[in-house]
Length: 179
Image: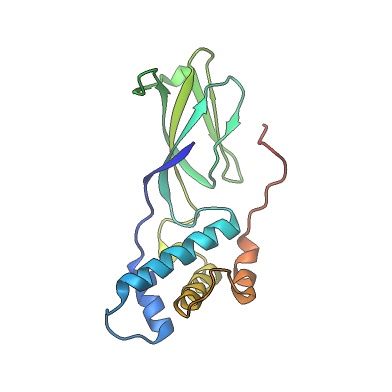
């Protein structure tokens, strides 16, 4: 199970860019535009298979001695590995009881000593630290999709948008990650 602890930052720059893209002056309707940007960003992340903006996540795993891949990548940092007790509370594990690694592709890996039970791994994942670090074609695709949604689009990204996103799409084959 993966839960978001700290969501990505709101992108005021993106809102200004969408207003300019749509040639809208003033701030009337900003709430609706912001919602369309969020939906467009979520659809983009679903299409490319990775979070765009960095966020803090907590993932619960069964503690195993073999390496296990974290569900979301690219991982920027693993900040803590805690043992989960029967009552739901968490206790920080000592460094000697677990191992962490982030490989060259940005995949995060964790392994734990036997007898720990379940662990909660807290980590930061995402392709970019802020909206300005998102690649220009991806940003433009999000703006185009948000504009499409504003015109009562059906939520399916047009071919022109997916063509912009396709080079950043992450494809994984196989049922599970084994190291």
